[in-house]
Image (cartoon, rainbow, N blue to C red; front, side, top):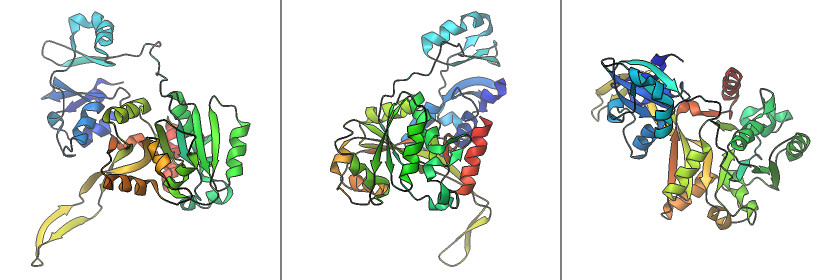
Length: 347
């Protein structure tokens, strides 16, 4: 990996930094000022800024850590010991003028993904998938293949790699095909099926899990992939003592037209040529406390966002966990499904 991929100028925006972080697997950038190394910026720094309602147009210099870890070139032989002691996975090596000469990555084979996320996962897999017609005329949405395996198996495999081995699929449309598929494949996890006799929405189906889940669980739609550290999201949820934590993705949309604002007198107040809007959107993944299941009325259709609104109105603590735009893949529509296929084929 080229050193330049790790470098970002302190005058760049936070959104620029998030886009660049997506290109590095280490989730850290090294900040420069007139070419010299001055600070470090991690995905955690950005997340904390967002959660404090910081401006999305903020510059890197408003967020970065100006007391970064580094070693001089003469100390390079101590890098692995230094990284282990400071729990860092990327370390800049600099000269006497604070120019970064190289970046040492912690890539020893013995460093493996921790598998500590022993949390049940509920996947809403009962929808008709109307937006993916005609694919869903033949297959239920969860079984639509992305590459060699269905989307729902991609989702399960990601959670399983982090340690989850208990999955509940809320099924309805073409449910026997879904059950047949998972009954036939070899798997290192357990799948239980929750049958909806009638459509209950993205939230109502949880009422069918009464008495089955009594711990914090993860809820996911069956058409999304989140490329993030699930354990970090779970730990954040518990630390904040949230009832529900919604995983939200940054979304950047460029308006392809000049946008005009008009004054009360009908005159042009301002003009913006092809502005870019940045906001956070719901990905369809949540960390949820079991109280939600027990409180639900049985056989009552309701969307999970509506459940969130009800608890917000009662003053319950509902949080968000922000992720970058490239950390979320959604196949809810045909063009998005093809983009998901392209990205997974490239991995």
